[in-house]
Length: 316
Image 1 (tube, rainbow, N blue to C red):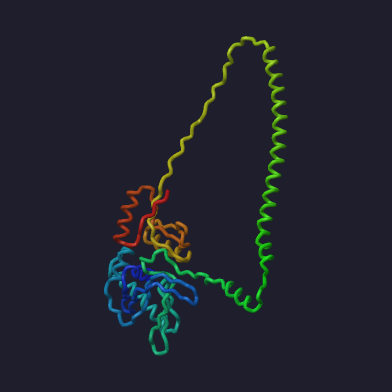
Image 2 (tube, rainbow, N blue to C red):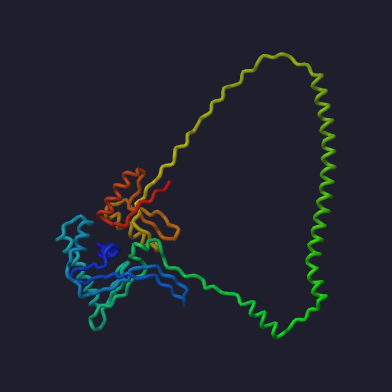
């Protein structure tokens, strides 16, 4: 039983998840941030914190785990209590306790628990598909200012005659190129016209010989020939069948997607790895169906019992 996976699932929907006898993990909405020094952008997210004082059992975590694991509430509460005792022993020994997709816990010399949240998973569902990125800084050209400063130090003197000559020089280049193109085109056209005339003369002579041979030929009546029957196989292409995938989530790291697949398979779903989307996130599915009605029925069940954030992706 991986207790932190169930805590992480509930943090997508709730702002407070209490672990009986241990403490509560709290989430608070955090707006998008832009760091001008590092040129990095971070989408809206949930910032996590830990409160050791909130340790009374509110039934949320245990009820959810009992429903998923298909066991009684008392049995699941006993398992959670045993897991909490293991966590406490780990912290009392001075060892760092790492909870996947949540953060790290460590006990200091005064006996207080220090919490370092994990930033690998964004528990804010409205930011689905958004990830942090770093953009290259924009470098603006200051060429004009440099030219002005150089002209102030070293002035250039250009007489009107030279300026006029310099202004006419580009046009002379264009006129020479145009004249060369026209002369080349006329030469090619003459050569092509000459070859075409010779070809027409040869073709007319050949046609005269063919006509003469046809007039001198004698034709005989012959019986019609029976041609063999040609059988062709017509292959009908089957129409493409659309597949309907129930999406469980998208993860930035492939190992997190693999863990999610293992977790869903333990719950009885035919989970699979669908690939990466346009944002480079690894997509995981609960199940896939060729029948859209069956896919919609399963989606409604998952939304009611597992996750309200599940959605349907149809691919042909």
